[in-house]
Image 1 (cartoon, one colour):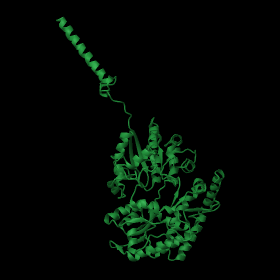
Image 2 (cartoon, one colour):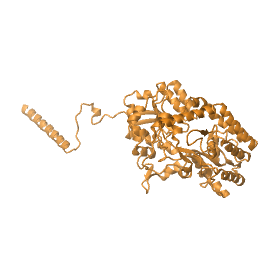
Image 3 (cartoon, rainbow, N blue to C red):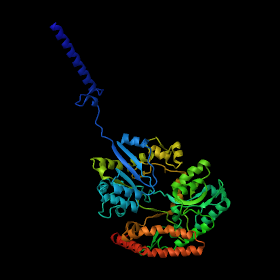
Length: 541
């Protein structure tokens, strides 16, 4: 009996030894084998994976909607970058009011994308003074690619805190310099109406008047309602540039300056607008209408001419072309006054449309900022910018005969609706938080056919940035008087536009200029010239 037990035991040992040798043999041949581990049984064979970095990001803009929560780009970033970026949109007409509310409450999302104008920049720096957001300067030193298309001097003047000089914002990177800039402001006109009246798109103010008159006399009604030859929102003041050149003009020696508050050439703009109004060529609600009213008129098919960005043009065309593919607005050339220089609708410069701030609360958790910055740095690479702008390889964009990525036909059809339905569904562009361009160029230009056309049509309206004017900054006189000066433009504009005669319109304009002298224009102008002189002393041209 004992011998039998010994024999069985020996056979078992031999069997176990054979199995062990077989397992070792499999390991040596790189075949699958069971590894021993000190980990609990349910983690055998698994590596510890870092938790996804969750980022609550808010777009503090006037125009953005958030992407749908379950979108392809969110899914891709979670899988490939271990990032869970949750985007919300303030979607407010008054970002400054919303930012001030957040200043009062101290409730700042992890990351906030803000519009970078003087007012919003100032509020963001107040967030910094209150200790709600962190200094991004050291991080920008570590990741210089994040601002590689901008200018350090401009960034310091425009975005840095006036109190401590720190940079609490990462300026966005739409690359507004001359090499890769795209133009998005200019006149637009109904192509089908031009064909109907047998005229070309106007290139001068005189030609514009004749075209608008032909529209009124020959187009007639649209769906039983009278047409509106020309309608504008706040971008109507770009028409003023036909006489003034831009919103400011400074002498070559930087010793004198004209801008909206003291430029006598504004008088001719006022007279022209009055002429359009008296002859029934101008929308009577041009001064008072809200953005939704203005857009509804463009989309209704009743408006012939306006000046704006491509957004309202694309939105209107989405409606017009759905009814009839021949109906559409097209970009119209910049409007020049004979004898005067070409108007500047947009400068080629380093200014940014948006910027990012990071909350102190988010930064308190170790590793959060490092991981965010690594992501932003990747987004500035050709690979990152391409994926964030076009999606995962082959899903939405494909290479054409020239080797450039272009949207698939079904994607292009969705994009042409100009309602951002493709972007909100797919997440394309939303996660490109610094608006990084794809350089070197890897894609065809995104957008509608009309927007692509605009890049050539509006190009004469682009001018190089005046560095001393822009980089010299502002001072106390500007801060004190600017809020009083700027709103006055529209008030006097309305008076002149609705004047009973040309003489009255001229008189109103002269009264306006005299009024500006009393409410701070001389002080602001003198201060600006002084700041420019100081800048030139430090930075000779």
